[in-house]
Image 1 (cartoon, rainbow over the protein chains, first blue to last red):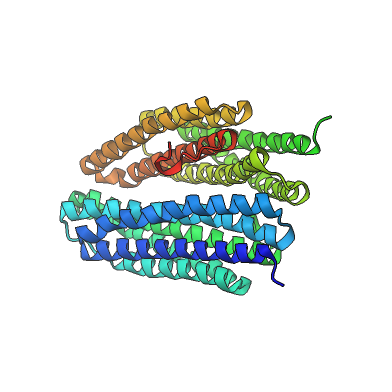
Image 2: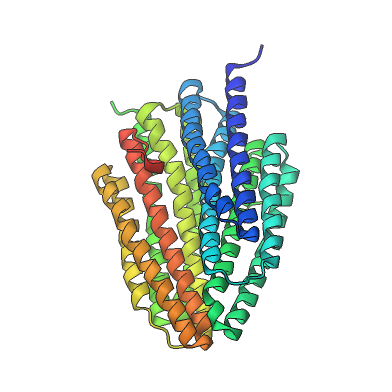
Length: 218
Length: 218
């Protein structure tokens, strides 16, 4: 016979993935809106993110209930704690998509011709990291989680490149200061998104192996 | 007779405050190092932050133990969940202090004469917010927590001012681009520190009243 807690954990995982789906959609929409300089797409990011926020409250509440009513231990308890943390990470990722959408709107308003090629590369990597982190969580795959940790380095390197080229561009043409600053801020938001995907991967590793690899733990 | 869980919760609160003390020290040191352009102080932020990271692992582990062994419910359970979240916030605040110390070192290396007056104002507000958030937690004071939420607006306004004046300065003298960008990044780190203090205040309100005021909940 199945344990009651197994059903509740399955239910929680489904909520978590639903929330992750909204984050993926918010990110894809923010990036498409940015690259196409499309105000409607950029505006819609905010309403997608509302779903993320609603899911956050729902999931926290559901975790609290399982803890209070089931008194889980060992792997079950670790899984719930990981989901509480993932929940915070996914919510922050939603915020970052909204930040980028706001920046994107400023850029549309300014109407300057900006080269997004590095940001496009970064966004592909960041999206792969988010997808990868959610996949790890579904498949309970700690090897896949370790891959995510490595991908984070690429995103950081691309961000450094964006900062460097943006500074050079400002010095060449100070009228582009705001637009170049916006590129830097978008790059930093994508970098932070990658960091949150990394946090999720670390949480997955902890939940399924009990190994805490944060702060250089092996 | 005192309940065993009360002692464990008191122990956990002490750890939390010890961690908070390291964050306050990291922030004060990063700011002093920045304003005095003192490489030794800036370098020492990293070792202070190591304590923050160690505390994070210790507290997560202690929370896991209380949950597994005591099966807390209601207010006790909410308190532990709040501490798990506070733990994440404080750790991120430590990271932000390290970020600012790195930026400060770049600025020392560059040796340009930079006006820190707005950053000094921001840092006073951010420090007050961090201290306030920890005080709320000690005194279990949800009215004080609500004050923190209001202080966050001042920090955001100061950040906008830093961004505006830095952009104007870049346009006036593009040779200052890197230094002005560094001011903007420091302002953003201080803004994020304020956001984490706000998160802690929200968690305190949730733990002691059961009210979830995130995302516009009243």
